[in-house]
Length: 380
Ligand code: CAA
Ligand code: FAD
Image (tube, rainbow, N blue to C red; front, top):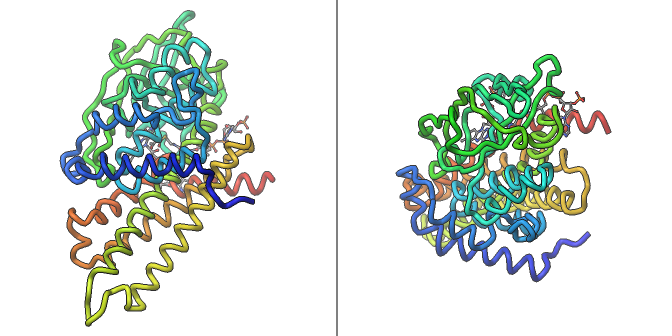
């Protein structure tokens, strides 16, 4: 076991930290308030290689490992979880999905642009009647020979109004259940593809979440990903990597809140001393740091499993389950340590607390992670 980061990993982490502090931090409160998608910053993240972190350089990616990915995600998420979810979806759902399961033509046509940040991607699995119960897909993709016709609704789609490329999961043969599902690449502007209004959210308000409607959208057969009927397994395998991204987002939100709380507690005085000298506050800091370190171990283990070629279904679910719990619990504590200042925007911790909640919901709720973990334990 080696608990130290390589020099290269430290450089990557520091580059992400520097970018987060100099580029993301200045406008983060305004973007949250106005629900502004960070378009220019996404371009800059593309220039830095953050939009295709693990993609092979031959497709325009940075060719880094999953450890680098979680280090970057943590640093971005400490400051701006809206920016980091854009990075997470683009990297671990869309780029990974196409690189691991797409055809060479799909990689040349789409991945090369997604990996550089020229295109932004979206991953469309959830529906009004199929969220946790993802096999109950109602969107249909009817095989018409050289193309498919898609009809249906997807909701809660991150990057929904801003993406160029959409990976869409749909049911082709209902009788075959999860084996009758396919995944397709859709492009913005395809006839019959409508983008609904933007959601007004509690947190990650700088990210862009929309309902999408498909009315007889004609999708060429070459846009199907993988073999006929492989779409559900494609979605599940891709989500296992996505959960590493969201786990590292949760870790970043928690550690960002902890760092702010530690700093504040060393400056703020009450009853004649800095508040960190009151044991009630000091113990909160001790609990926060311990839990964050434990979450970091799980996140790193999941990333390491991916890098080693091990199965990471269970380790990614464990990392997401635990890191999101730590993020929720300790962002609340960070607000508490800030007292009244914690309740106002300029101290940042109230935003981190609002942003933390989504990490227990998307890419599989905490209850779903427990299903994945327990099924894996029973099978083992
Ligand atoms: N790898 C390969 N195959 C898998 C798999 C995996 N990880 N997980 C399931 N499968 C296979 C099963 O083996 C099974 O195949 P067989 O019939 O051949 O045995 C088939 O898929 C169906 O699996 P289950 O019977 O386990 O299906 P289920 O109906 O019980 O559901 C579930 C399983 C884990 C609950 C799944 O529905 C799930 O993960 N739900 C949560 C959905 C989710 O995470 N949505 C996230 C949307 S994206 C998002 O949220 C992005 C964002 O916010 C930014
Ligand atoms: P439901 O499935 O209706 O669940 C409701 C409650 O019941 C939850 O607490 C759940 O855990 C619990 N529950 C359900 N089934 C079980 C069970 N078997 N055992 C125990 N408890 C259970 N989806 C995408 O496809 N792409 C995206 O880009 C995307 N981005 C999102 C961004 C945001 C801001 C949000 C809010 C959601 C996003 N989602 C996205 C959707 C997200 O993945 C779903 O909201 C999530 O999977 C839960 O589905 P649901 O909302 O339908 O809840």
